[in-house]
Amino acid sequence: MKQHKILFIITIIILSTAISCSNSYIDETDIKGIITENALINSKVDKISSKEATNIALKNRGIPITKAGENTIEVIPILNNDGDTLIYAISFPNKEGYELISHYKSYFPIVADVIGCDFNDSLDSKKIVLSHYIKEIEKFRLSISDSLKAIMSLWEQYEDRNYDHDRETIITRSEGDLLSLVSQSIQEWENEGYVVCELAEDIDGLPDNIYEYFLDVAESIANPDYDYLHNSFVLYKNYYSGIGSVSPLIQTRWSRYSPFNTEMPYSSMTQSNYEVSPAAVALAQIMHFYSYPTSYSWNNMPLTSSSNDINTLLRSLSDQMSTTYAYSSENNCNVSYTLRSGLINSIYANGYQYNSSSTSLTQSISNGHPVIMHGDQDWYYPTYWICDGFNNYQLQRTYYLMVLSIDYPLHYENACPPYGPESIISYNSLHINWCDGTSGQYATTAPQLQACDGRITGIRPINQ
Image (cartoon, rainbow, N blue to C red; front, side, top):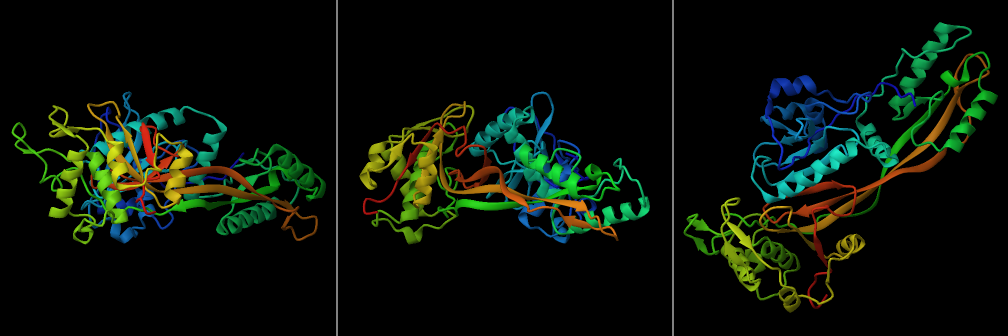
């Protein structure tokens, strides 16, 4: 398919634990130089620059160009072991979070959108995320499967569809008039939001039988004085429709770290309190979500800051989970633990399921019940987090065939009924509360992060 020169914008990218990073900074002058009202990316290449990634991150967050340079934005390229950039992390100031943008257009443009931290904060959640997406992007950038071609279509929303006037064109009369008409028509179509493709090439996503039909129609009714292959065009629009979503259920962002650990046992080795068990933080936030059991003072528990009531609850749950407090060289304060099904059973309905399927995951969330997930991610101890929302999307297209009319003056006309909508790809993202004070939306190629070793769905009060 011959598509017209397209420029892409893309913002942040996601990191891995075992890779080296080099930092660069973009100040206000740099930002004003790289952002335009329609900052876009080159579609002729399979990867983007750090500046293009920054543009995408700003666009995704709705940050006006004039506001972008008020504070320094940190751009961190994430490298693999061979020194190749896989992701850009765009870190916003003042704990406003970061976005992860894929360096390669064979993966989702926006990989993650995280709030509640700086990218340079040392958090286990970041280890899980980076480890997962480093493997994913490494795998996808080397693939040429049909699904990857569909994923690349998601980048078209950031394209600059400038028509390529260097194409070879067969013209038998009135070259100047035709070129003027082609240029004007393409500009009008693109202004209306269409992607414009020559009929001479295969059209991305268009079924072969429909393409052959378009060829037959153009050959039979297009102006015979001009080459119909190079002067007929297929137009299409991308429609991103939601096919199911649940906004984040959990509003709290409680953490296993200070200042939420003031009631935890004291370690003489580190001369500080042990961290809270992430399992306890996960269950405590779900209990707050339901305000159940009613014996707790839920109104005295803020959403994003600590209090005596919160910290006491976290210690109580940690003890009931038979938490073993220990120290490791890898983490200042480390906790190993077992999440006891009996504890959940004593508070909530026994209809919950363990190691349930991915379908049960989204079904539980759709029913208003957050899901506890866990994974060990190849270090000393496992961790727990909450999945409490998701967005399922579908990219669809409708195709139109435009041919030169037989009548003069020359003009383009719709040659046949449009084809579509054609489903190009379905994709989803999960919202995760990491139980470390952060949460965010993460692009997924499956309904769960592969780091997840287990899921507990259907957790709810006994009376619900």
